[in-house]
Image (tube, rainbow, N blue to C red):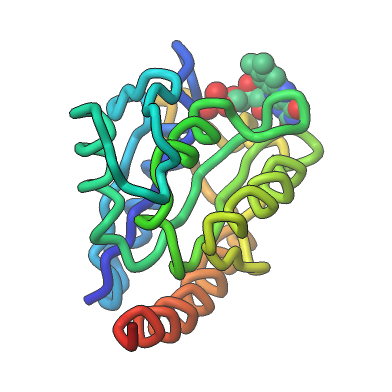
Length: 189
Ligand SMILES: Cc1cc2nc3c(=O)[nH]c(=O)nc-3n(C[C@H](O)[C@H](O)[C@H](O)COP(=O)(O)O)c2cc1C
């Protein structure tokens, strides 16, 4: 089983991200290739980057950085769940990415994005530029959810459409391929 870390990017009071994350985590239960864990950046609660040295040196001074490193190190793959704020990805995710470096290297990343008409796509495109610097491999296959609020019912539950389910299925199949390939590459080192 591969270790999949599903990272929820939003942290604001009253955020809707957890509803999307709950749907995605639920559907992951039916597949056998990944052991999935949801990492909620609100719970991780990192301060703004306060490490004195470049993270690639891994000379972490702070306990919160060491803890974050331990959470990400065992991952074989990532799914980022994100909205977009002002056409960009949420600042807490950028901060969390910047804190560490080697822990991200040579691992694949897929995306579930949500928003208005743009479905969070602009945020995803922006994340890709950042994470390739950290030697992650971003996937093309993704779940992009337009007008996501119309899919949240009165109980606050996100109800996916058939096409979202299909996109998630295709994305996870592709993620498995890259996970296997990059794991083999990391093991070679
Ligand atoms: C500061 C801010 C900026 C936003 N900018 C965008 C945007 O550029 N595109 C978009 O589709 N939605 C935008 N929205 C609406 C969000 O898609 C919506 O509020 C969503 O619930 C945000 O995710 P969250 O609830 O998990 O924080 C914005 C919302 C906020 C609070």
